[in-house]
Image (cartoon, rainbow, N blue to C red; front, top):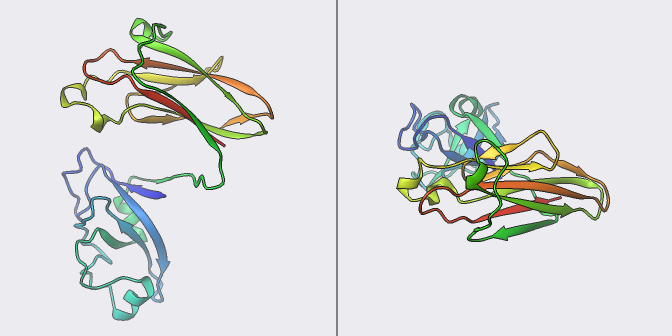
Length: 222
């Protein structure tokens, strides 16, 4: 999956073309039209759209022939799917995010719920308020492995807790690079494994806040 991320501090605020700020739009496809224009087919996960710049539903850029080329239908306004020019894609967006296609990959995970472990962390931002865990990952073959730490997304926290988020971390044992995050997920850069190699990863979780479930997991994909 590919996403366009828009700039801004709130998805309640729209820009001059009608895109919500601080929001993710799904990229469905890209087309080069017979008139030379390049357009991108988008979808708002909310199922509606307010986009009104070039190649929007009501744009005068469209002809019947161009609509047929792109597969754009007329009359389905505000169905969540819309087109935009490649120029507006880059102008209106902050970044593109592309998910790995894991169809032919293999994965595994470790999950812990209600973490009440007594094992103080080692970092200044965490220390005695954290729980520290060592996760071992073994790869049967030589490959690159993507390791990700997860906890609840910010939107899952009670309102009174959203501004009290503490810092979690994951890192490869004896490495100098520490990956920190406050909620959601944090993926490390790809780690190279030799065949049969086991590598330890250290997770430190700070649950020192009220009404937050101390649940976490680590996944490995290769």
